[in-house]
Structures are given as C-alpha cells and as structure tokens.
Length: 431
Length: 143
Image (cartoon, rainbow over all chains, first blue to last red; front, top):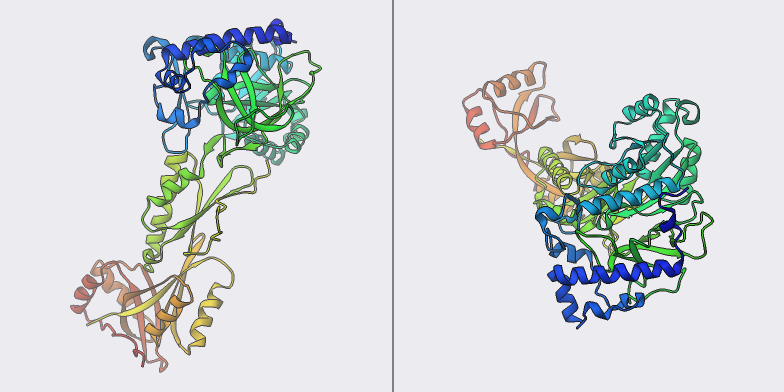
C-alpha cells in the first residue's frame, strides 16, 4: 500500500533529476534570502550556478547546530517571519538557547504528507485509530505525527505522554490500534499493563506502535513486540528536519526509508567530512529539498548511521538507513528530551557550595541521577543547609532540562578524577 | 557564659562510614562523650562531642573527611526525669528553635548536658542568661 505510489517508487534516474532540480532551487533560495548562507557562499567563492550536478553538493557549506544557535531566533528564515511562517518548534541546545525551527504553511503540509506516507507504508487503513503519546508542544514529535495521521484520515487521540492508567483506559474505550511513543515509555507502559493483568492481545485492539525520539536496540523491539503483541516500527526524525517522518520503517522492518525526494542523504566521516564507502557508518548529513521556511544545506545531524545497501522488497526505491548507532557528540536523550552534559555542568557550576566534579547516571528506562560533590567549605554541620542545596540543584536542573533528576550529594573528591576525558555520563539504561 | 563546640562530619549513606570515622578517633586515643547521627535520604551528618576537640577535628580533616567545628549550647541538667522537658519549656517560651539536639551524661551520672544546635547562638545565650539555666563551657578541653 502506498500513499503517493509514483513518488515512493520513482526510479533512480527520475529521482536524481528531481533531486537536482530541487537542490538548485533550494540553493538559489537560501543564497537570495538568507544572509548567513550568502556569506558562506562568498567565503567559498561559490555561486548558485556552480551547482550543476548532484555531486556538486559537496561544494556546499555545512550547517551546524552552532549555526542555528548563532542565528537564533530568526536568522535562518528564508521567508518573512510575518506571513511567511505559521508555526514554531524548538529543540534544546547545548548552551541554554534552544534551536528555533519555523514551518511555513507548505512545510506543515509537506511534513504531514511524509507522515502519511510512513503510516500507510506500515499498513494503516481508514479503520485505524492512533493514540499519540508524544509530548504536544514545542517538541515536534506529537504535532507533526498528529497532522500526518489526520491527513491519512484516521482518528487521532491526542493523549500526550504520562498518566498511564488513563492511557490504558483510552485504549480500552476507543479501541486504539496504533501508538506513537518513545521506547522508554513503551517499556514502562508494557510493565504497567502486565502488573494490572491487562493482556494486550486479549483486552486491547492494538496492532502497531511507532517508536522514535530515543535510541533503542533491536532486542528491545522484539521484547516489546512480544509483550504488547504488536508490530513495532522505527521512526527517525529531528526537529531541525521537521521532526518525525524523515525516515521510517516499512512492513519489512529492515532499515528506515528516508524520503529522498525531500532530503538528500550523505553519510560522512565525522572527522574528515568526506563520504564513507556505501554501507559504512558515519555521520548523517541532510539537505532539505522541499522546505520553504527554513531550508538547510548539509545539516550535520551528529547522528551516526549507515545506508543499508540493496533494494527493499516493499517496492519503495528510497534508500534505507540503519537505526541510529550513536552520536558524534555527548548528547543523550531522556524522555524524548535532548540533554547535553554541558547544560548540567553550567547549572551546577552556577550554584554556591557545589564542587567541580559531578556525574550523570541514567538508569532503568528514564531515571536520571546527578551525583554532585559539595565544597569542603560549604559544610557547616547543618543538615538543613545541605537539604536546601540539594533542592536548589534539583530545581535549577529541572528548569534547564525540563525533567526532574534525582540529586545525590557527595563528599568532596569521592568521584573518580580521571586523566584526560572524565566520564560524565554513565548510561545503564536497558533500552 | 559560653557554649561548647561539636564536630560534624558529612557522610554519604554508605556502609562502613561510621566505622572509619570512629577508627580515626580511636587511633588517636580520643574519647567520644556524645554522638548523634542524623540521616536523610542519601546522606547524613554525624556529630560528636569528644574529650580532645581540636585534635579530633585536625585528624579527621587530615584523613580527608568533610568536617566542621561548630558552637552549640550545652545546657546543664540533672540526670533525672523531667529535665529535658523543663529545658524545652524554657526554649519554647523564648522562641528558640532547636535545629538538632542530643544528650551527654557525665561519668558520675550526677550531671548531664542537653546539647542544642540553634540558628542564632548569641541570641539564645542572651535569652537563656535571664532564665535559670546553666550553660556549660568547653568540656574538659584537651591537654
């Protein structure tokens, strides 16, 4: 089943022709409308007309997370902010300022089209009901999926995350057939169901779930599929590329088709910036081909993946990427939220009484523990002062990273001080 | 009138912590007169009154413990029923809030001390001067 069969099964010759046309259009658009890109072109003595083939993409400048930060909030817009864009999403960054992503009317529509392709690709029909358990709000995850499912024409339950008992009640009352959620929440949900004696196969109407926004393993997929008695499909997206729907698994569950009529995919050696041989892993670098509000050239996602060679049995010709194998930087994700150790560090170092050393422990599915050494001189024998310090750290971290970590106070110099790179994040999650 | 000092040691809730701290004191021949342990979810504070305060403080610090030396009130009382209640009434009347408290009893069992940590020790001393309570000076300071 296809949503847009012609484009989903386009042959390589026509795909390349379409990509080149769109790339040239995008390049002209940013050159004319975005001073940031015009300056970069000037630095390289590059003109839009120099892009004559798809291979010429390698002449184009990269766009990085820092570029988004430096041009926050409106600097990378290619259309007027009044009248040109209709929606804002953000994604957290390393230094406090989030990344702002704007959608034009067509961008909203186009991202919904891609989701529609993804859903239909996994077998969604008009009798399906999607319970959307991602966070509605600034995060792209929920809204983009929501619009895409509406485009397919199925009922969407905008449940948002949390309140697991109500989630289960919704599934029972409205016979939800599809779920969209993070892997950590899926694990939690299946545990709650088990403890309440709910057997999904017997008591619910679930058919499939879409998992995204956090890395997880193939073993976890198998386990969840068994526990919930459903098919689970991987979803890849990032706010900078409009959120979910960038790449998605078809029923064969063997890699995620990345919509090449909308994105040019490069897998580059993270050190040299040169392409790796096909099938090797490297940093995923994406260029938008259809975006109006904020077109990006060669955006460095920092996600590590590889291309899965060969044709897919489903008939779609769009390349498949592997699940995300890692990150170039030390960002980690908890409950769908991107967190950088530097954010934690900045907060800790701004609080009096906190010593230099700290550690972040990630446990169970989504538990975060921050171990903090106190300063020798801060200790005055008063337990209340320590409790106040502890809650101050918790509060300040919460307002920075939006989730509430557990904080543990330690004596000075109890954490290992290693030579060179100190291990700040200890990830023991079983995702 | 003056208070006395207590030693506080910060301790994560980990097995063996008190064993280590008391080991340091035992090695130095320091006698513990009173001990109080307060623990919360995750960490605790161990408080001592010992016969050689300065020495204990120095030695614990040398061994890398997080230590603090603080002045507290030592209110004299008889080792008999109703004494703490009597003191508590006086403190209440004077609106002195106890942050932490414990008792140490003299060897003779004639005299005991109610050790009280308060926010404003000078104010507490001033107020208690007017009451019929005796505050004790440094306990047999070392030599």
